[in-house]
Length: 378
Ligand SMILES: Cc1ncc(COP(=O)(O)O)c(C=O)c1O
Image (tube, rainbow, N blue to C red):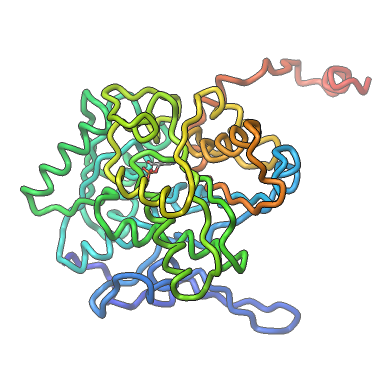
């Protein structure tokens, strides 16, 4: 194992800070996923407990949006608030900890962008080599910038995500490098903690969970998390799992693989999801659905989330809200329901799409009167 500069277990209370509030000493825990949920994770005495501050993301109640969609109660789970800006960090911290425990020196993944950013960051923190394979020209520039600055070895291929994943599966079978795609069960273990947090915050599971679906690891992970809390008596109900693919990349909905998946939501541009069967099981066991939304529906949900709730997400992340809007418009009644939409990643990684829809700006000289007049105050 490479030298980490700390001993195993040393970071068990990382992020524990103390402040004074009303004269009282209050402890605020930002322990990270490994330490906080260790009883639910595959952690042994030899698993290093470290954190970049992942997890504990906001669950924001949005009454204005709920009113517009005719939904009883609507919450957004802001996974863009994780250290690298997406939900991937929850699973990556577990996958990397287990890779370290097993003595790996290097990790490898295929990615539509967010997995590679997360893998590169956690590899840097632990001084491992990260090798990432990404489809050329199909990943948002902000995500590429992350992989570059964290120092990953980057390979771009003339192909799509599904082909990149095939290459990674084959090479990680052959060489001493740990695969950290969501095929790695430790990724799913870490990602299920988001479901725990939702129940910990609400005191109960929601009636429905809306979530974007790409490679289908995250819907699998949430369902596992909801089931585990239900079985342990921490929740009395289980949510309907409402997964949404993009129309041009909707293999589960269409019932067959898509050779050339196409969508503006590059993070879910996947034609042959690795966790296909598990996503179908989550849908069926929960009484939910897996449906699709068009790029236009995704873009208007992205805008609605930004203007109606102050949340800027990347296009793929808006598929959850787009799904809720679609079902509500089609007559499904949410007026008495509590709904959580998972907002999987921040919009700051993919500003191109937002900038394309910018209205013309007012362009004026640097003059108070001119600005005042243009604003209608003069
Ligand atoms: C922002 C974002 N949302 C949703 C997804 C889909 O998650 P999954 O591939 O686990 O279905 C991804 C996957 O890369 C993503 O990056």
